[in-house]
Image 1 (spheres, rainbow, N blue to C red):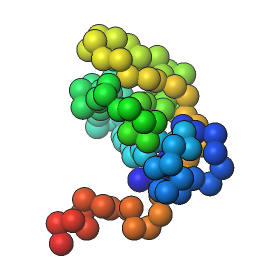
Image 2: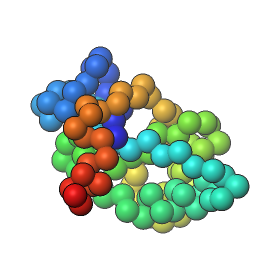
Image 3: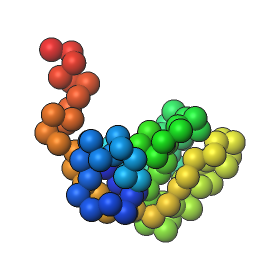
Image 4: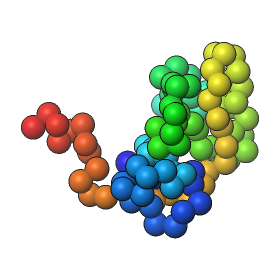
Length: 107
């Protein structure tokens, strides 16, 4: 987990909660030989919610390449979802206590 999308340097959970412009995000590593990017985007965009009132919780896609950006926009449009798709912005890892949060809750 981490933060991206804002302009504030070195975001923290507290600064993101205060509205520094960053979004809480997941970085996804995938293998296109196992799952094509458009299929991945269908899964991601299907779960996207347009109802986030704050940047902290918005659903969005930060694409690594222009081709990924075009594919994500195509999928969002085809699914009728208003999901922002933009080029990757600087990534900041979240604090250790935010890493593997779901896994920690199962213990």
